Length: 240
Image (cartoon, rainbow, N blue to C red; front, top):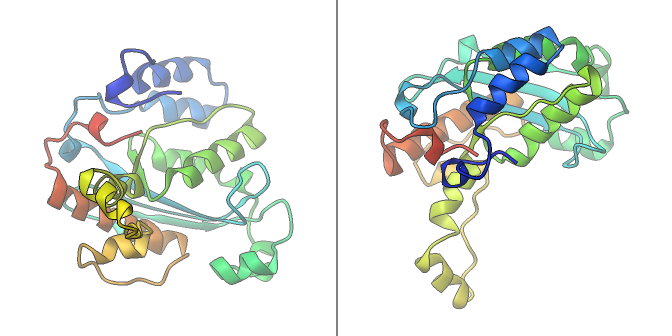
């Protein structure tokens, strides 16, 4: 597994991995994605183009469930550009369950009219190319995208992400004070997207719309950076 700066001596860097994949991949869109590269590990986050990415899925397991909508929004530490973002509804390989519909509010009729994910993968990879991906809970977007690319293109799709949930856990779930709270039976603070945003005074948005959640994630990351980090922070302190 490719890891951040603390273990880069023992593991290949993301930059090396992208170079190898750009040479090895047969799919043109994947080759172009890897050829666009990733920032050097010491590059300041304030200089890096970012993209917030969010998926709505039929469940939590990429081996059993599928993506039903995708939202992405390009941004940096100063500006979020929703008008330059993208939103797709895609048709999953199996019918939606009522539980899934209640959760993300995407209906049978919407997915029936939607393209399969194979039809939009190349567009999606082009939007991500050259940008550092920011998500809230990396165990959705990265494994689900890799599963989709592997199933439809027969190749791997791995890339670094900044996980705003993991960043929030640094302050709300870790450290001496948090351990002391647990000792006294005090439940840790929620690090879900809406609850995390509330700690920074960010407005409440309706959840489980992929593009709205992408905007919400971008805003949360900007707030986290303003409170806890600096534009000079190297990307390797943030990505996983």
